[in-house]
Amino acid sequence: MPSFKIRPVKSIRGEISLAGDKSIAHRSIFISAIAKGKTQIYNFPASRDCLASLRAFRKLGVTISERGLSPYGLNISVAGRGIYGLKKPRSAIYAGESGTTFRLLSGLLSGQPFRASLTAGQSLSRRPMRRVTEPLRRMGAEIKARGARRTAHGATEDYPPMTIKGGRLRGITYRMPVASAQVKSALLLAGLYAEGITRVIEPKITRDHTERMLKDFGADIGIKGKIIGVTGKKELISPGEIHIPADISSAAFFIVAAILLPDSELIIKSVGLNPGRVGAIRVLRRMGADIKIIPDESSAFGSEPAGDIVVKSGELAGVDIKSNEISQMIDELPVLMLASCLARGRTVIYGAQELRVKETDRIFSMLTNLKKLGANIHVSGRTPKYARPQEKIVIEGTSRLKGATVKSFSDHRTAMTMIIAGLFSQGQTSIDDTACIAKSFPGFLEALKSLTL
Image 1 (spheres, rainbow, N blue to C red):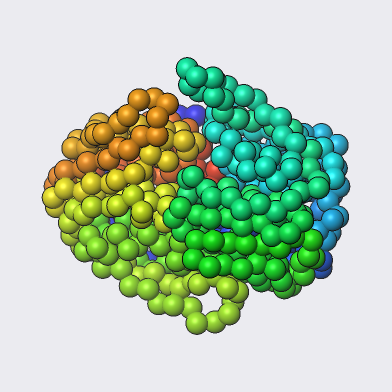
Image 2: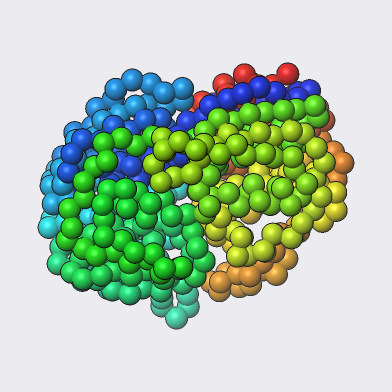
């Protein structure tokens, strides 16, 4: 498709409602499908990733019907089949580029009494899966995946496509080596089918959407600090309705734009404020951002906290972002890197190496593009290719950026960050591809246009 061109705007002002939180939406489909009863899901985002989960459960025999539109999403109805009611798919389930769909399905299918195959798109097929397949095998699942050598000593990594033969799982206690809400969720879903208790120990607390929703559906789940345990073999019961709050990851682009563009004021309605997801808000406030939160005191969003976010423009100052904060802002780091480029002083981001195994290597994509815009940014402390890197991103703030020709690297968050950068970079910014934005936020450009002056 032709390149997309952005020129500076004066400010961003107004009030907006955004599509539902992608992480919550995936889980709403997964858990509703295996519960007893019908679940109405409101504000389900029509993004490629979430629709991949929807299509997957239709292949597993679940009836899902659309019941009208929310501002940027769908209202749908899921006829749950109970914990033992999924059907063997007639062909492989295609997860597209959705890592959440693929990894969570790996856990759920591990508990089924049939064999199923999972395939993925080109980018997802290059993303590592051993972090989820290894503990699932310990639970008793038979998993065959495409393997690839990763060290000179013969160790292998698992990649899509994958075939899973489930059933007869046993509960285990698993200490996760890397903080990952996707891996944790996959193990908890598998634990619903296991004998005994499945315990997951996190190295750092991650988003807890799965735990909250399982509780809402009556699962026997306990949480003590970084230890989450679920008892298997118990039916789930639908609460009837799930209202999905707006996605904080989508809101972050608008928040940064409103901070950095002068004379801006923005209200984002009913945003999800899960404690494991608001790390970007905490960091921006630490940098000096004028961000106020008006909590929603109703029970509309069940156990998920939500509220309106009010943002006004202002100056930012550089800060250190520690490695123990990264899991609470991993999806917002690209746009936080952009904000840091225009902050006074130095920002150092520690322990962000997980960005290298997203849809693209986001550290590489952001450094490449931001340097083209005139940013002073570099990475230090890298280790050999196959070791776990302990690197830091160092950004020296500047007073302005200049327009340039940049690339999306076929990554939705890189693309949206570059569009935001173009709003306040001198001259014209041109980005090679914006089609990838539909992966998470198909209405992004229209929403942004409605607010810019």
